[in-house]
Image 1 (tube, rainbow, N blue to C red):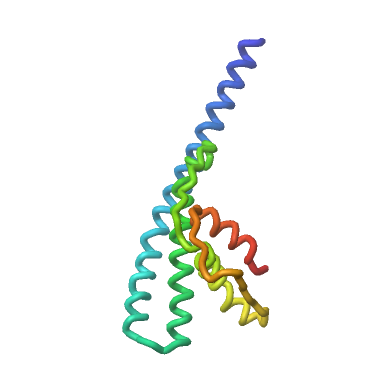
Image 2 (cartoon, rainbow, N blue to C red):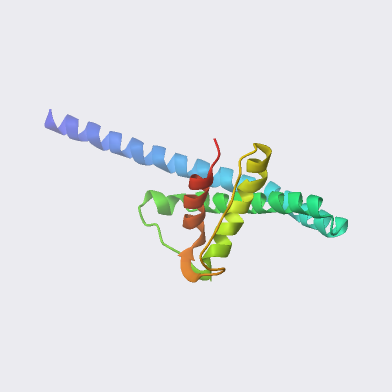
Length: 150
């Protein structure tokens, strides 16, 4: 009876490993499949922006689109690190950059939407720039969760 239980537990554990592997493979494949079309959107958008020139309003809309497509590409790259995340071996990738400028850029992704919803937005900082080492992906996740509009 004990051997049967042990064998049953081993089978359950093997099935869980196979399910986790299938899930990881699914996310990896979907992520790769999404990267190409996004690149195919981003490149013509950049060309269109250069062609249209300095129309401020149009240029502003295209910059928002470009930033959001780039953000989606980064999120897909994060999905591609899914195995690393599942194994609890998340590694930080700190890079020195202007943290205030980064926050402004992420905040700017939400301003157009907020304005359309007649939500007043403002961002103030005590200094114009602050160069520190931080992981862009992790900070962006935190900020988008804070700024997210429902």
